[in-house]
Length: 340
Image (cartoon, rainbow, N blue to C red; front, side, top):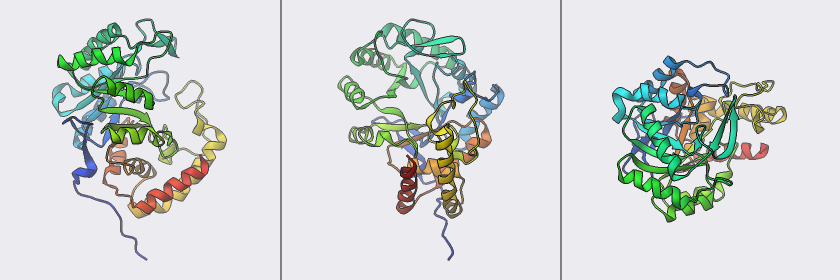
């Protein structure tokens, strides 16, 4: 029996673009994440600024206008690269950058990268200093979405009310257009909403990590908050290019992660083998399927792709054209639940 390929080759705007939260900011449903582009000791790749800039600029060729960066991505290097890449076409891009992780001030210890410690600090004073540094690195006078990177904890705890006060001030001053929050739980979101408009959150979400479906996703849908899913490919494991014998080098971002442990990696590789008929059906790659599955979970879902080259971005962007059937979405979920 001949299988009809269920792909929209046209420009279906409902599939390809969306508004952020309650704003009029229109973005592509796939955004380009620049954590890896920033380079540094957490990644196996060597820094290649020219390729990174080419990747960011190529995004517009694919109608991808949504960029995500942060000062904590290799100590400002990611923001600097983004700034160079978008300088001549700033208004064509929607840029997220973040605050709350600093290496220049005291705060609650977060982690150590190389020989440098990172700290959580969401105080008004720190945010004011951070945004000026980010604007300078990004070579811009405004940030589209300003997002808390991680949430405040003791001993340097700042209530969300105080953080939101300064964010609302920055919004009124025209330095930011919208407010976001990353790595939040339900209580965090409820507290943000008490003190202003929260339009987008970032959360880890993949077919292998579905924890946010229990409470966070329903709350966001109820309050018209966009969810941007990061790590949809689980650091590359859902690309189908990593075999069961792969060992993550010590000190890299993959080292010690659940799905890169030997017994779990074997299970994922076996699951991916069962996706192969779907790749034939939809004329796509394993990575395309993984991203399309996330997009199929709701119209308020955006996916962050960590593409590092124009070719990787070309490949990942193909997921925008795939309309998975309800049966196939359910089948993929069933396979993932069996190994979770």
